[in-house]
Amino acid sequence: MKRSIFLVLSAIILLAIGCTVGATITSKDKEPCPEVTVPPKKYKDHLRYLESSLDSLHHIKSNPIPGEWLYHNRELQQYPHQFLQEHPNILEEKRNKVYIQPIGSFSKEQTEILKTTSEYISVFYHVECIILDSISSSEIPEENTRMVLLPGDEFKRKQFQTTYIMNEILQPKLPKDARAYMGFTNVDLYPNDSYNFVFGQGKIGGYLGIYSINRLGFPEWDSTAYRQCLSRTLKLATHELGHIFGFRHCVEYECLMNGSNSLQESDNKPYYLCPHDIMKVSQGLEIEETYRFEKIADFWDKHAFPERALFYRSSIRLLKKYANRIDGGIHNN
Ligand SMILES: [Zn+2]
Ligand SMILES: [Zn+2]
Image (cartoon, rainbow, N blue to C red; front, side, top):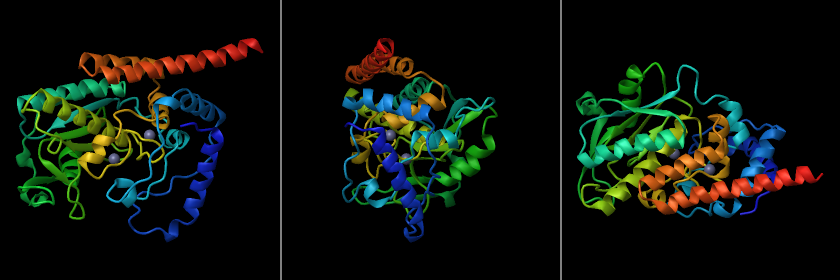
C-alpha cells in the first residue's frame, strides 16, 4: 500500500488526540499512551525509504472482526522514532546475549525445533542466542499451575502461570550478560484467571519472557506436522523476543508483531516484520537491512522454505533499486 510521510504525520497527530481522550478509555486498555514527539528528519527519511521501496510486499492491517485481537484490545501504533527514543540501545554493552531456558522435558522433535529456533533468532535479530540446560518443571508449585477444560478442547490441559515463571524462576537466574532470558516449555500457559491461555508473554522492554510449544501442533506425527510446528514456533519466539526488545504490537500493517487471540489468527499473520518494525530492528540493533535480509534468506533456504527466502531476496532487490534511483537523482543534480 502506498503511504506517504504526510500520512505518518497525520497518524501522529491522531495519536496526540488519542492521548487527550485517554481518560474516557475503558479499563481494558492496558498500555499507556506513548509520548508523541516529532521525528528527526533522518528517521523520517529512512522510514520513507523503507515504506516506499518495500510497498509492494507489505499490506496495511485489515479492519479487525469480532474474535480478533485488535477488535478486543485498543492499541496504538508505536512509530520507529518513538521506539528509538524510548530504547536507544536495544543491546546494552554488558547485556548482549539471548538465552533460552527450557523448562521440563521434550520430545526429540521438540528439541530439534528448539535448536532451529535458536539459530533463527541469531539471524533474525543478529544476536548470539544460547540454549541453557533444561530445568525441572517441578520448580513450579501447584498453586501456580491449573487444569482447565477450554472451549474447543476435548480434554483438560495443564497450564503453568507465566508471571510465576518469569518473576520467581527466571528472574533469580537471569544471566549477567543476558539482554533477553526466555523460558520455553511444552506445557500450556496462563498469566492470570482473566485469560484462558496465552501462547507466550514477553515483558516489553524488560529482560524476561516465556513461550510454549503446547498449542503449536504435533511435530512427532510427520514431516508436514513438523514443519507447521517449526514455523509457528519461529514466529512465536521472534514475536515475544520483539516485546522484550521493546516492540509493542503493530496495528498499522499486517506484521509479525500483530497481537493474536487464536492459533488461526496467529497462523494468518506474517512471519516477517513490516517496514516500521524492520526499522526498529535495523536502527535499534545497528544492522544494515540488506545484510540482515540476506542472512534470513539463507536461513529459509537451508530449512527448505524457498518461498520465504524469495520474499527476503525480493526485499533486497527492491531496497537496492530504490537506493540506486535516489543515488541517480543526486548525481543528476
Ligand atoms: Zn504480543
Ligand atoms: Zn509492524
